[in-house]
Length: 343
Image 1 (cartoon, rainbow, N blue to C red):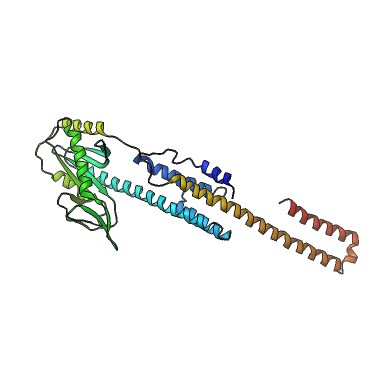
Image 2 (image 1 turned 135 degrees about the vertical axis):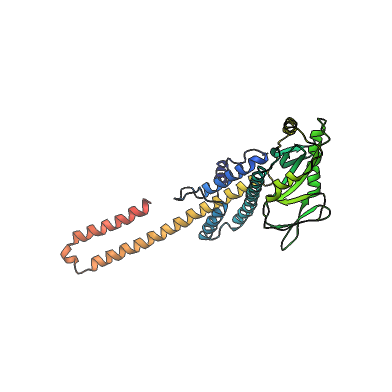
C-alpha cells in the first residue's frame, strides 16, 4: 500500500471542508460525503451510483476483501464502524426533519390568528437552544418540541425522559430542557418590556401508534393529530392585536442566533480509514488479476504445445507438407507470445 494513494483518495473528497456547521447544513454535507464514498468505490464500473448508499459500499468492499484473501479485515472493520455512526447520524437528521414536517403541516390548521416560527435558535449568552416551533397567538405563545420516535416513551415525576422497549433508555431531562427554552424566550420578550404574556410548552409525538406515559405535571404532551386543537384551546388571560403579534415575531427573529458547531463525528479519520481500505484492496486486486492472468498464460502455452504435438503426429502431415505445418506452428506460437507480451 502506498501512502500517496491514500492521500490522493482523501484529497478528492471535498465534503465537510469546514470545521463547524450550522444544523441546517449537516444533512446536505452528510449526503455529499456518502455520495463521494459511493463514487470512489464504484468508479469505472458500469453501475448507476445515484441510488447507492453506504451499506451498498460495505457489501461491495466485503466481497472484494474476501476475493483478495481477507487482506484488509482490520481496515474494513474500522471503516464499517465509522459508517455505522455516519448512517445513524443521517437517519437521525432525516427522522427529525420528517417529524417536524408533520408537525408544521398540522399547525396550519390552527383556527386562531397565528404566526409560526420554525427552527428558532436562541441563547442566554452562555447556552444555546433550538425551539422546533414557536406559535404566536393572541393569548399565548407556545413552544413546540417535536419527537419523531417509534419507541414508547415514559416521563417520570422528575421530568426524566426515557425510551422504553426491551430496555429502559434515558434520553434527557425533558423538564429542564423545556424550562430553559421558556426562560430564554421570556427574557427575549422581557427585554422589550413584554412580561404579561403566557408561554406554554408542548412536547408532540408524531407517531400515534406509540404509548406515552407522562407523570410530570409541568409538561403537556400530545400526539401530532391533537396539536392544533390543544393550542386553540389554551385559555387567554389577554388578547393581543395582530400588530402586537407581529412585534413579538420581530423580537424573536432579531434575537435569533444560528451558531455553527463541529460534527460529533471524526470525518477526517473516517475519510482516512476509507482511503486506506481502498488503497489496500486496489493493490491486492491488481495482484490477484496478475496472478489470474499468469495462470491463463500457462494454460494457453500448454494448449499450444498440445496442438503442435497433435499436428506433427497427425497422419495428415504428409498431405499438408512440412512447410505448411511449420507455418501453422510458427503462427500459433506467435499468437501466444503476442497475447502474453501485449496484455
